[in-house]
Amino acid sequence: MAKISSALYDYQSNKKLFYVSILTSPTTGGVTASFGMLGDIIIAEPNAYIAFAGKRVIEQTLNKTVPEGSQAAEYLFQKGLFDLIVPRNLLKSVLSELFQLHAFFPLNQNSIK
Image (cartoon, rainbow, N blue to C red; front, side, top):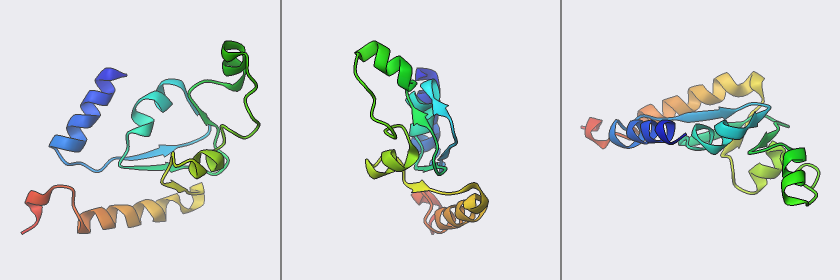
């Protein structure tokens, strides 16, 4: 995970590339712990199951009950974990708008003349 995060940092910081992370259901484990949450924009699909570990694993490890729905995209969106929740049928148009906006306001300030 450290190598992926480091490489992604290089792309985002030094090369000024725009990184959009799209989380589908299920998104768990290493993806959640690393590159899935490092995007400039993080998009989740509706009702997606997103967690670092599964409910059973958390409950067995911590000996606590995980509240129902606490690993759903809508709950996590309310907590500020994502930028958008977009259904798959609208994803293409939303991504198109994001990339057009990025082209208009590039991260690389040297490209503005």
